[in-house]
Image (cartoon, rainbow, N blue to C red):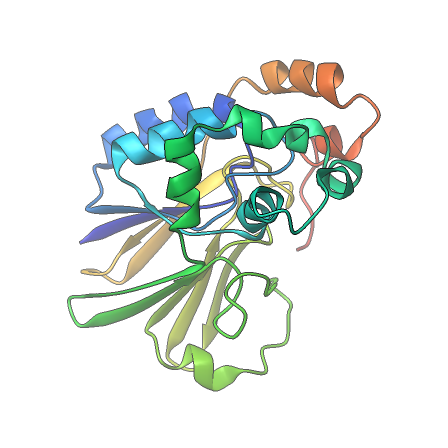
Length: 234
């Protein structure tokens, strides 16, 4: 029983062709997206169309919640533009009604049991599913929340991670759309039948995304810097 986890695509449509081709080769039983379609880059609507068409299990990320906060009038879009770039500019007009409804129905966590293996999937962390941040060197204090599961899969940090907490394996696939650990855009394969997991990276036309950033967010160098970042310790 093979599961693919991927996370934090952040509007980067250019990675999708390579990812979809990889999924044809992997042929997993489940594909689970760990949250954050929105934020940073510019093609959220196109990405939601693909996720819906492929029937991916999709979690709500914190940036997806920011989008809903705009929809509900809880936040001024300018606050998000100032922090994360112009992908949030008039974002409601760029998303179809059906895709807005899709986002409204998402949750930041998902649980499944396969072959008597309990798996908890969270955008953030078990105790803070939407906003928790667990890096490879983060001290874990809410130990009991993890012990409910054989595997805990996390997103949000954009850092690939494999840790063991007693008998629980904690994994983060990294980011498919905006790598921050210098190790490339990636996804995670978990085979619960053999208790094996593997991180895999995908290549894509990054030059096309750089052109978009230069057009829409030339004044925000971070949007390019993270994409070109070299390997880091965490």
